Image (cartoon, rainbow, N blue to C red):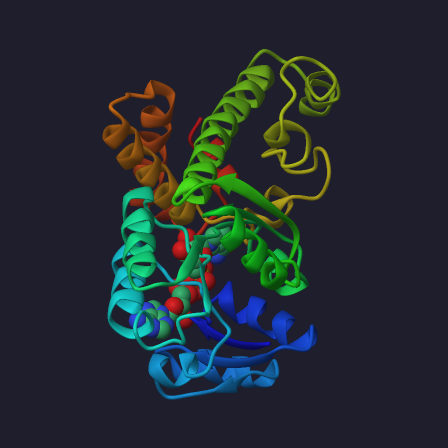
Length: 289
Ligand code: NAD
């Protein structure tokens, strides 16, 4: 299949070579020369513009920083330039409203399009083990799935346009709240004289159990190996958690609800990020408690 790939950063740079490995012909574009060089090493053909990348493409995949860029790329460079029968797949994490707006523009021009944000970070992107949450029609999902399954371990149809983004931000809002709660639990247990390993052993098989407790424990030396064991380097950056919590609060406002725990999690990560910790794994927030 001829696939155009736009946005070859931390995530896209790992994903595009997996399409090549699966036998697809990938024409890739990024604004950064370093990203293009990396994509060439991964077997992608690189081109000088989005127009060249999408020429004759059967699928277009994008992995871009934010909604404004996604809208610009699709409205001005993909829609009307890619063949009308190309399936358009945006894997970026963006706000639900913009995802729906871009998908509407695409549909009006005769394209099938899905929003397909991912769970899993840079390591999963390179290993081809991402989880994709897909919003779009049944037909668009089936077409997108054929492309996405070569880059991930799971491809799930979340619902109509924008529902992939909705699933992603609701999941990450739960994660942000859970992580802060987990950090508070471990910090308090320690103050009360409880050995963190003992608290881990108990909470992991009790009703306090969650992914943050059991699989991503924020305390160094406790549970499986996590960024906590590496001085909170790598993993899921605080700045990215904050981005997702901001998107969640925007979506909540649009939906006319006020998720108080989500709002508080956003405030706490905002303060942690502003104190210069944006590059640390999000579990490092335990240091503030
Ligand atoms: P990144 O900044 O490393 O990569 C984005 C790339 O897009 C850059 O190489 C940039 O040059 C390129 N770009 C920007 N504008 C462009 C344009 N107009 N045309 C072509 N290329 C353009 O970001 P990333 O970490 O790869 O994240 C990408 C998306 O994935 C984001 O929406 C992010 O929220 C989401 N995400 C990231 C992670 C993670 O762990 N990094 C995990 C899940 C989801």
